[in-house]
Amino acid sequence: MNAIVLLATLLAQCRRVRSVEYSSFPAYDALIKAGLIEETGVVSSFICNECDQPHDAKIVYEGSQYGYYCPDLGFISKPRSEIIAAQPNLGAFVAQIADALACKRRKSSPIDKDTWRIGAVDSPAGDVVLYLHPTLQDAQDIRDIQAALVGEMKSPFGVVLTSKGTLSVPPYATAQLQDVLSLDPITGKLMAVGDLRTIAGVPEQRNGGRPNDYETALNDLIALRASQGRAMRGRNEEAKALRAEFMAKFPNAKCPSLPTVKRYVTKTRSGS
Image (cartoon, rainbow, N blue to C red; front, top):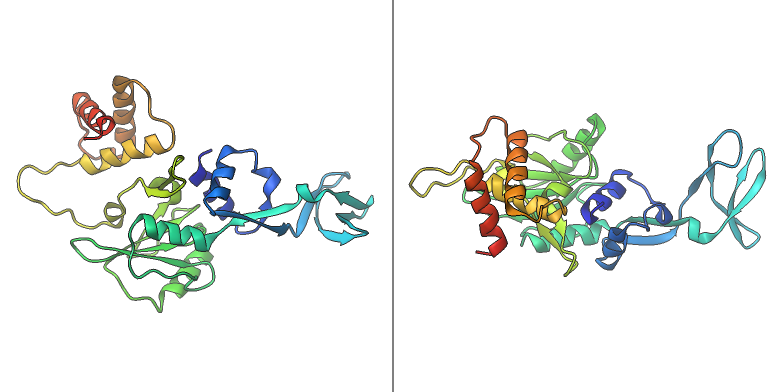
């Protein structure tokens, strides 16, 4: 599980979780160091599996011990290390996304409840405004973000980043965090792996010549596979995998030939 997938997993739960459930992942330490996860106090409840009927129990502090009460077994103590709470640091996350994308019109606090404005990036057709909302799975999520956007400056294009769900809030597009962001394992900083302007539907400017129908999408796939650790060592193997993934993701688009895909892989790996 890479860092952004782990962060999205925590964000999707919309509550504090027990750090011990996730701290074994190497990505957890990377997110702690980056300031994107914070450990704050202890969780408010715990699932009791000691009795015949598992149930949720409120954590209490009694007699210099943390624990909870089970109707069948009474007070059950728990070491503090097992109930330390962790949650995404959304203020830091939003700020670091804005830094990575050189956003303007930033905001360091939610515009309403769980909806954040990350900022806006320039495009030839107008600003692309970026928002973050934990999940976009149901009607309540849509109502929440629509209410938050009422007082916002309107932009012709926009993207709502989310950890789970694919519902959209027209005219803005929806994108999963792991599809557009990655955490650099060396610098510990966020970086973009997807073209948000393309996701937002910004028309591509033509500079003459025959249009390239696949360059942006192919480059985005190459960067995404590399960020997720899925890139293959051999260029031929990676080109075949990329081509198959391109056809699966864009079934109605013209698919580049295998030599063309291999040329893009070579160009990317050589840094040119």
